[in-house]
Length: 145
Image: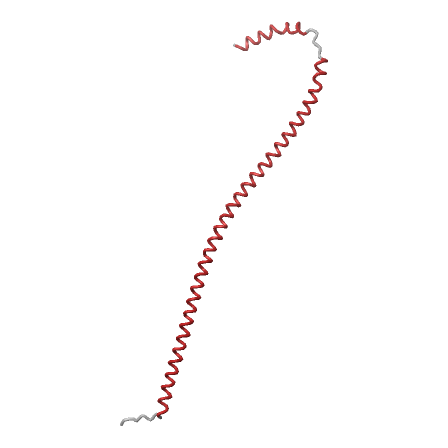
């Protein structure tokens, strides 16, 4: 016995319409998913671009940091030189002060020398030399040998 299709005529159309509606809905959702995938891909590309830019900036910053460290070394060397130069200048200033004191002392001594020379008297001058002269000749002869 064959079963007859007992479905009402309108039900078949209703089911077809529901299938078509679902297919349309699926197509719309697939388009939304495709659009979302496109947006995600675009966002991924933007993130990759920003990551590349940040990587470049990191490289630049690291290069600048290396330059800064090099400059710090140069500054430290210059500071050490400056400290050494300052110490040398201080030593030279002390030497100059000592020389000024010596010049002052010599100036005083030079002012006194004419008076001292005038006060010296050597009444037996040539006779005193005649006594010592043979001994000096003997010493000179002995030291030459």
